[in-house]
Length: 235
Length: 235
Image (cartoon, rainbow over all chains, first blue to last red):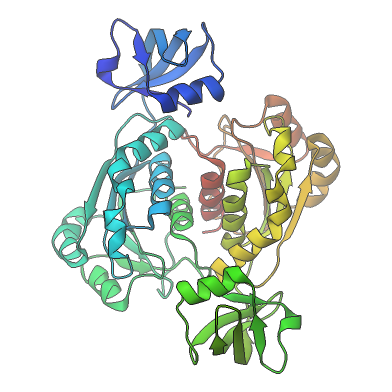
């Protein structure tokens, strides 16, 4: 946790009170803060800054002298569209994408996504994964996250509007052209499930504005592909 | 698992027998292979190819008609030096680095690495993590992996010889110059522990041939940094 994220309503007269167990535990056990120490804080969807620890117990943390005077880091102008991964991968994938600065994240269905994945209770916890990602990055701005449970209506009806005039790439091992390097402009990136998209899906994505782009001969796990491609697109 | 890795001694007269529980379980439950199906295989430190499933039970898999006729994917000409991460991160970090094609991986001590991390039983399992990474990538070539439990002797006595004439970068949030993009040549990359290197360590690394390079204003987890920087350096 490189930043303690506060709701605007939590901050009054430069003071705040934190009671949730996860963050209290982290601040006590990992950051080992005591009365008088400085902590980096941020206001959700607002500025970053610092506060002083007024008191800390296993019940609550009281902060005072809150100063919010720094802009959060800029987001990457990236719309990341990922086939819903296995539940145990979901948390890390979302955390990493948000930490890296993804502005808009879309989880969608695909032929090789097991239908049961859409029933996982982890999908109810997306906000907490986003919070972890923002805390890691030192960011305060909530990204847009959406789920689309049907592949074809999403690709045919929603995706073209998202792409608009931007370049859009779908990672695909059998593409002729390589994934571009340091594109550094607004773009859309589509990443398939374990086992990849089926040919019908690649065709439909291509027909709706996505260029298949190869990552070379190695087959990456979804979450490794996300970090690696983002590092490559935004250098 | 995108490749079943076999020891050269396992292959005789184009046949092989696999009995280890992890791979048998994966082949039965995930790949769902039956008699007559084709499976992608590779010989450790050798060629890749295919085999036919002769029979499969919960005790053993028998393969025949083994053909080894394809070269494994080329490695990245990268020496990756990482401060030993927390035990629970170690497995993923090694898997990802090997999947991405790191040729030489070094785990080293650093001030902010807890000494207890060097006692973890996970360090006895490096070979199994490497195997998972190779199986994921579809690679057969064992990378070189070494551990150095003392920072200063490693940096002063070993590192300059590793660097030789190559560019070497240490990821550091307060560096003036950014991490380069698409360098695509042999190089050395040094990544610190959670919390980063201390100033003495950065100075010593710099004095011994590493250029500090920034990743921008976001603070990444070690394993996210590894995938993201490799994607950026080798585009």
